[in-house]
Image (cartoon, rainbow over all chains, first blue to last red; front, side, top):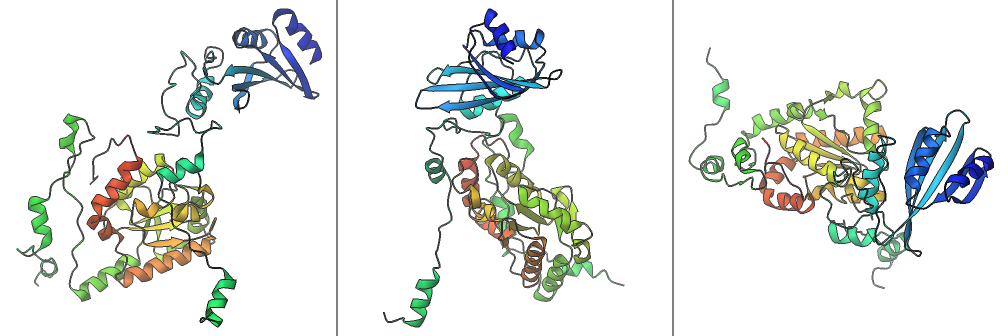
Length: 174
Length: 226
């Protein structure tokens, strides 16, 4: 995988190479070079399978980390490509022309994190959150308990502590 | 031989509340539907079922209690308990129960676990399409008080705010024996004439409907599906 990283460095400004396991590695790339890099990996280096896209909300650094995990069926190796985008302006280039199934992930990321992928088909259709009007719920500054208490009717809780119960039963005058 | 069936059916009289309602109380507007679709659906409210004379009603209740047909709509993970229930180990068919694929043929709605808003829309629609008499059994703690989804942003906490519930079965998840016990309780309630969830829904229809519409913000259904 180190050899692959050196080959990629000749064409792209990849950085932060890490190899947690023998057949698994991660690299970082800027947003502008993400589509050329993924196209290059798919067509030249045989990473034909996009496993998934995940998003991490780095609230303190005010940025989102998108991780594209690719798999090479010939060498049985995985490569994660990390792309950092701004949290205030969460726009990312769509990859649906490379892998058609990406649009499902992009719909989900749009719904849960509010990331915009211009040109991605069906991006605005709700997946799980039909008629959702609140902020994207998987962002870390979304207070899910507060939203739940404002929106839903909770059943009041009555507690039956054995100590209190027996005290009242045995010594009711106290 | 006279046809005794006609005597069992009580003709609506002047004092009958149902007759009054039939004439006047067609007040549902279906306002959320497009203009041209509003006439496709009924504008009448549901109404409490009329009772037959006591002896006949007891016979009806006995018959209802012994042929509970369950709507095969598993809303959450509690629906996984339905598989052992209907298969040979806890064979519910010798209680006269079976699963039906359509709400039109079912009389028991089993809410099996957590209900998201997307599911609630389908639940309301299926419940209203069921023919009366109909009963609701809420299984799993999620349907009762939210359970482990007590702080979730998309899961409702109490199903009894949106449709009436006759029997609760607690547990996460309850064993099939507990669900069977719940059905046994439901049968006792029906035989005693106390499983009145359908009538409650008709009486408090506006309250239920307001609760449902407060959550389902893209309401594109008729107000009451017949």
